[in-house]
Image (cartoon, rainbow, N blue to C red; front, side, top):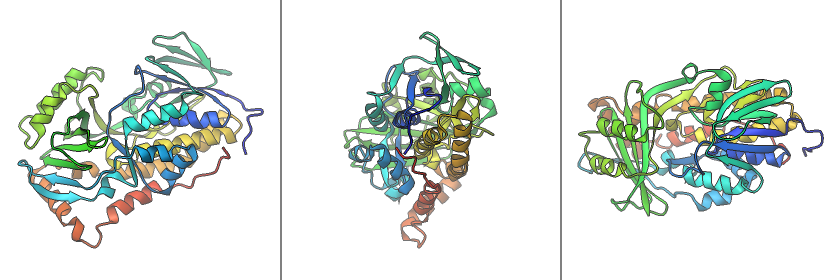
Length: 400
């Protein structure tokens, strides 16, 4: 069992209070470190899409954290998803395990569970963001948009695809972020279709719109995906993002017009590119990256959240096993997770073309494949392949 005696570099700043950040803070605290989380948002973020966990590796980490039962209580219990035409008529059905894995939960609910699990022993600094990192031989001086400068032994960027820590420590995101040519949006809306633990999806050339029930069918999530060359917009300008989405889906049938009308009042609207992050190294001196900031696998892979949770477990464990020596701990963390992360990213390659067919013929071809899927001998191969990728790592027992 690890001991905190002689542990170096105990004072660690984590940027990002989404999933990876609180998960890492949990494990760091368990190993005797003192984590602090800074988050740009004024509180724990709600909303977002459903995320899923698949196979023993994912479930083992949740179990070792002590939150598996909490996640199971909040699971979506989603059934099969039905593809429909512009008039709402059934075209094909996709089985539940393709979309929701072994255990699915809304991202906002997972974030709340992680916060409640860590808030009593982790310092959270909301409504603030890092503005500079200055490293010296004994630590890192960090300045903030609002708060006074502070010193930390180590800094971890768990702040997502558009990571501030990555930009400050490694350079502009254009060097690391690879767009897939797709954009996505999601927000909460009324369950006006009366969906019962299920969803509907409609695709048109270059576009996909969907809706699925959430939180015991008391609400629904509206989702949009569309292909586009790189777009220029302010990531904090929500109104401009809503206009982009409305323009992209003008003329699309099924429930798109009604959902777009509801979009203007949505308070949890999220819009971004579907991208991956590729880096030669995740660490620079006393700074390292975790989750989407290091190796975003893009939503279509279905691997991002499980990858973040496993990465947090390994990073804290290897740092503890190295006695707080960041050079050794960071290197072993990356050695243990990098190949696994590459597999998760590969799982998302090409998925976008099936999600958002770029022509009428491709949309027809995809729907025909989905229609035949329940009747072909290899119908379970998709889910099995995803689960195999999710399990492609051997987890050490770090003794905490």
